[in-house]
Amino acid sequence: MFDRAAGLRATGLPGDNRQAIAYLRRATSIAPDFANAWGALALAYSQAIAAESPERLEGFAELRDEAVRQARRLDPGNADAAAAQAPSHNFGRWAQSERVYGELIRRHPAHASAYNYLGTLLMDVGRWNEAAGVLVAAKSRNALSPITRYRLSVALWSAGRISEADREIDEALDQWPQHGAIWQTKVKLLALTGRPRMALTFLQDPARRPMDEVGEPLATRALFITALASGKRADAAAAVDAMLATVWNISASAISTAINCARLGYAGLAQDLLDGALVGTGQWAGLRAAGSVVPPQIHPLFQPHAGSLWPTARFAALLSRIGLERYWASTGRLPDFRRRG
Image (spheres, rainbow, N blue to C red):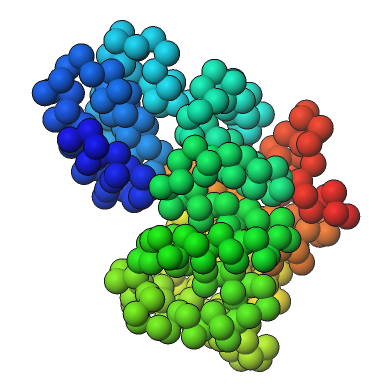
């Protein structure tokens, strides 16, 4: 049961994590003194809490805390139990979380989770080169995690290390050819590094496409890439209309949608969407409530295709309002786009 759960947890998919929780609960029932099973169960609960909506998680926090207590009773230095207590969301508390992750790495240097947490935080604050280094460390400690590999690919690409990103994502595709996050990252990497026609070819190949990449999201993605390839205003308008039609239904995608709009030349609309999603102002203010279930991942703000927004006063004001300017000032660590400038 324990070994089965380990394989499922590596995928990073909520459904697989739920099955892993079932296996680990069974493992702790069979072997109640097995500290590693309790620690793994605590971390699986923590990952579910981070990824799923609250209405599906009744009692999970209490079950996580119980698993932490049991793991620590049996093994006071259990690394999974320590990782389960680390904050999984960082929006608005980046400095505090960065300190926690640094301490977790110091105490458990062989454990991958803290490196993944820190790498994700560094992505969200625009420190791409540092994020890539940390995620390389995570990969070296757990090469079986597709989530680590896709994040590393995104960090390398966003740091301007495109050839390295290509190699990383292609290796990941060979290992997980039907993983949605890996496939999507390959599409984005091609589309947003000057290769939109190659991206369309890849996107339209049913043999390469994951089974759940169908319907409206797939069609919208194709319209966006078609607009990149053609450079035509009419294609850009059609893509923007399609993206806006889905932004309420897929509230977590509002930030990515905004950045895609900016890439197509709709910088004002992009800023309106960001103001709505992140601070709840303007005509898109409802996006903040729609996306409030899970704190936002804001790393798209600092990816290269957001570059048209970076010099604007509105973007600077947004960064101040969400607390990033304060974080950068307090830590003395600037985002990559400020260093380049």
